[in-house]
Image 1 (tube, rainbow, N blue to C red):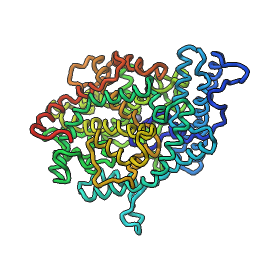
Image 2: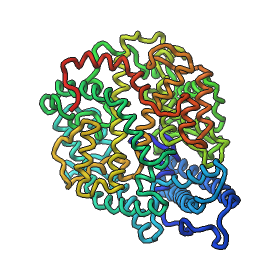
Image 3: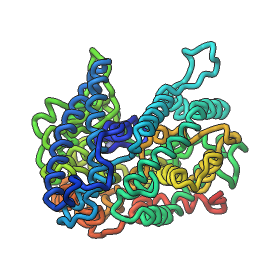
Image 4: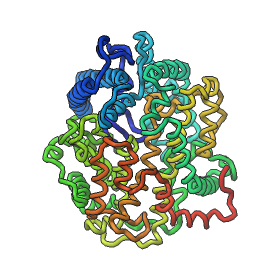
Length: 616
Ligand SMILES: [Zn+2]
């Protein structure tokens, strides 16, 4: 996860988007009008405007980052107030510049200036209407929905509030319980938090659409899709194309997991139909890793535990970060600056509470990059360090561009980079850096591939459908009296998942997923999931890896490092297909790298599924 401009799926809100969301009525001239009624705007006006926007966004961004860092490291009412004030100031400025940029639509300017104007216009996640009353109402609704989710808990016995479950408790039960009635109760319990959001969501969609229309977009969904350097409808078609590439693999994974769950839970799991949503180890059925023990291939145990190695050697948390840094320097990147080491948070402080969720920070959009983690000596944290540092090295690569360009090529790219590097944390890499004596032989690969597929392949249809639902809600194709029915129709269509009990329109099940009440676009996570395999394949080829793709690590390949840096250094100064081309040699997103990566698992699944039903 990364603060300010991006985040990982399922995680709490980061700051800039939150800021943009809560942007309230800024005092700006009506969009479309010239800067000065007496003269039409010129290219010089645009230059002056962009210089001001770059300076102001940088200054406010630094202030908001510093306030956010302190608020998360020293949690008090005062730091929270300082943080929200700084965040609001940044949000107001971003909203102001987005609306003002519309004035220059007809001015003839060089391409890089035009791109900066365009990026300002599509930077908003939520456009507040210019009518102050409507704007205030929209801002209030969003924070109310967010609050409803944040305070969400369900109580088996209202007389005993200390046994009520919040999302952490729900997550733990879903991950660890193998008791079907308990899982059903937990699933139904959590989905009682969202019906109160239902009428709010209807009004929210109306008001946010009004704001998007003022900026020239058909609706809020079209505004979100406009961020991808292509017409909004073409982007939707593009996602469908990528999904069609990976769907056959997903169908087999789904069929195999269904078969195994049926062996475990009996007739609750149909032989041919959709999988009940409460049995996949996760409240949203978006990541199935937790049920690995139920589906583990026989004799495919890796034979070593990285967690045990890190604990027994021992490798300290700081050393784990140094190993992560060395991965990037081995590719040719400059080492992290001294301030990274003196200002980051690596271990949980003994004297106070902090927000421990792993994040990467870019405080000054220049050299002051940091991570904030409470590192444990586990394989998961080892991989997360490589992921978080990916954000930091991306941030350093684009630091010399104009401020508006200092971001990833599109919002899927930032998360994808860290994950790309994490794909290179292979057993053979562990051997090369001296943590492991010998890598397990290829017969053990199926276990590792199954683990990865339960996380990455299982996620894809979920990553796609959240915005499929919202785009249709915003466009009016899904009416309020069909919210829940259409939600479950999409979950059935893409995921092959069904609710454990009937879900009428008295429920509002989309609201039980954080990103819906928080109003965070979700397609980025689908893109990141696709792109990381495409990046990994291209970099592995550049590194000269001739092994099966899942065994390739780009560690110590300067050639791969050069290709990676060529893309990172572009930031978002060019349309994303050009950035993609710099790394992969292709301007097209391509999900076939996922099929390459999981090819041995696919062959194994083919065998296991002989005579078994596939699909639902
Ligand atoms: Zn991340």
